[in-house]
Image 1 (cartoon, rainbow, N blue to C red):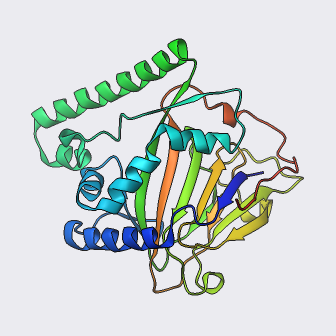
Image 2: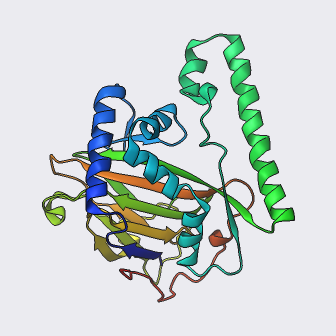
Length: 279
């Protein structure tokens, strides 16, 4: 069963308004088109130059980035789940600002052999670096290296997510809502938690809804923080948005760069423990 915490007013409402206004302005003036996923979600990941420009030009986003991308926030998140058998270190690798990494796939498609070779060398560098950093932290500090990968997302009409769990290398996942919809129950955009039925032992990361039982629906509110420990049974979804309003939110995942995620070890999914406490 999904283990999560939901905290109201983690961010001040006025600060959320500032983030929304600055984010909208940045999208309108700096982003042309962009990738739309899951039926209606546009986003800026912190591995892109756009993210670094957003944080450079918009003071509220700079402040938020510093707050979330820190050892203090990682300690706070892991402390919510009383993880005493494993210590974590927050590092930056993929999220560092590097000019070459911007729109790398697009550059490879349109450029020549030199760019292709450069892309291969760069990806090899990242591959070796993440394993070296993880090995160093493990051997000399007895800690697991995690990197925060986050994005600023704008969800529009049609956005939805099926029942799923996040990828195996995510350790802790969180959402921060920056606004609310007039009537989430009618207009969608809710965060929905699920568990497998007692007679189901699915190994799929995307089980059928018929094999699941609904636990709770959580409506977006400005400043609300939802954090969950990502394991084999952290199933969740997003109800389909039918509203013409946009939902602004931040998605983040503390991601293990190398090695096996201990949270993914098999356990009894019929356990009756759940955390849905509003702090």
